[in-house]
Image 1 (cartoon, rainbow, N blue to C red):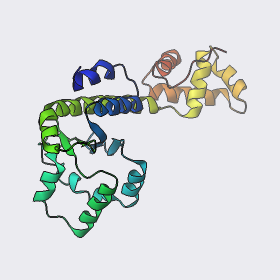
Image 2 (image 1 turned 135 degrees about the horizontal axis):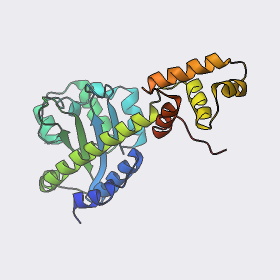
Image 3 (image 1 turned 30 degrees about the horizontal axis):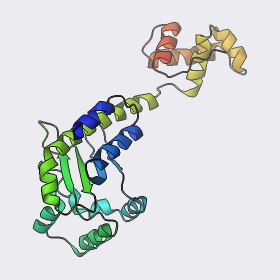
Image 4 (image 1 turned 180 degrees about the horizontal axis):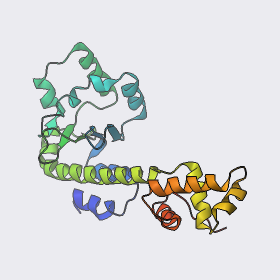
Length: 246
C-alpha cells in the first residue's frame, strides 16, 4: 500500500489529535521520514498559531526558550511561497545573519539539518495556512532525489493531515465551550431529574425559588429556548450538562 493509502486507511477512524499524530509518525517512518513538524498560522477563524511535531524534546525546549520562531529561516517564506522547498536549496539563496547561522548549527546537533517544507494553502487565499516539514532518516544520501520521487505523495499527505487536524480542533473547541455557568448547569441537571424550582431551591439550600427561576431563565436565554424542558434537552444534547442516572 502506498504512502497515502496507508494514512487514509486509518485516519478517518481517529477521533483525537494525539492518535492522528501517532498515525502520521508511523506512516512517515515507513516511508523514510524520521522527523516532522506541522505549523498552523493564525487566520480570521483561528487567532492562535499551533504546532505539532515529533522533534526531540530537548530541541523543543531550546526552540521555545530562545524564541527561535523569530529567527528560523524556514518560516520566513511561509506567507507567500506556494512551492515545496528543500532546505539546502533555499538556504543557499538566502542571506543569513550570524544569529541564524548559530541557530542552524544548533539544529544540526539534533540532526535537523536537512528537510523539505511543504506549504499548505487554500485556493483563493494569498497567504499560506500552514506548513508541514519532513526530515528524512540519517541514512538518506541523496535528499534531492528522495524528495523528488515522493514530492506529490507528501503534498497530498500534507493537505489531508491539515484538513483532518483542523476538523479535530474545531470539534474539541466545541466540546470545551460551555455557555452555561456552573450554577446554571447545576439547576438544569436537577430540572432533568424532574425537580421544580421550589424543590431545587430546597436541595441547593440558601437560595430562594425566585433565584432558581432567574438562573433557569438565564440558561434558557443563552440556549435560545422558550421552556425549561427544551433548554434541558439542548444542554444534554450538546454535553453542557451530564445526565446522571442516580
